[in-house]
Length: 343
Image 1: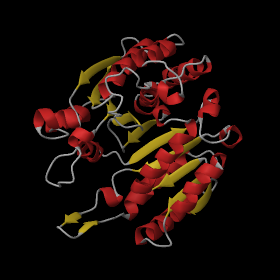
Image 2: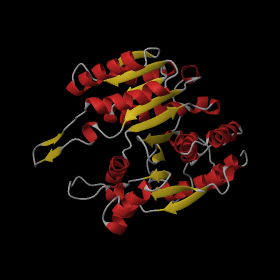
Image 3: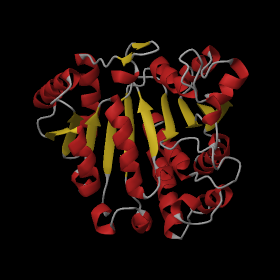
């Protein structure tokens, strides 16, 4: 039976990069997928007044995997807490599907070493994974707002920290770098204590180090090869994973996977909706393709097909494929054909 995949094109360049990803998936595994498309983010706000409808969430719950392109844009920017924002759809989807673990692999392809803003000798052989806790912390805490005061509550429980720590240790080859702000924040002190406990009782053969988030941000630039798995909470992970993305030379190159204890995962590029280039045909679809590969690997247990897509992307880049964000002129359509040629 075909795997049921929910497609959420979203906003900006989203509707331009998701159809090419479907072409790539169908090329690597013909007849394996049954797709169903739904409005999401700003497009859903325009049509339904909310970024995530109950019907869309229920369809995602019944699916085998969810493939999301991008959400947001200046059209829906607002500081009014009573008005809907596209990003609320993301938070609702993560919470509604119980997606507590966000995986963001960072492996600059050899063909792009000279595209990175860092020197080649710094980034060569970088191969790290950011494991970000996705449903706790300051993004989900209670919020207050008056004319002169605002607050965002940052809360973590022992159980939330334990489950994300297990994901990180389970993914590590040799070392987990747990990132916090334990010199200032009480949540970080609990984080450090719990991570240390999980390490000692369940994963003693994996090396564990604790880094303050400001130190981790500096070391990502100064010595990215140092890292194997970076484990961190929601907001720090949001920031550090975008910083790590630039090791490849463009945020348009990085995929992500959001996973829970069971049920469908959510797979999406790290980049945003890029409204400034929407409609120009210049969007880089490679992170979308690689997100499809993560869907195959982590969501559908199709490792060979996932590796085939990743190899095709690497070979297309080695052949000289460069979209505008990588310093070239290739269009979305040309990038798609370059990857399809290698499948």
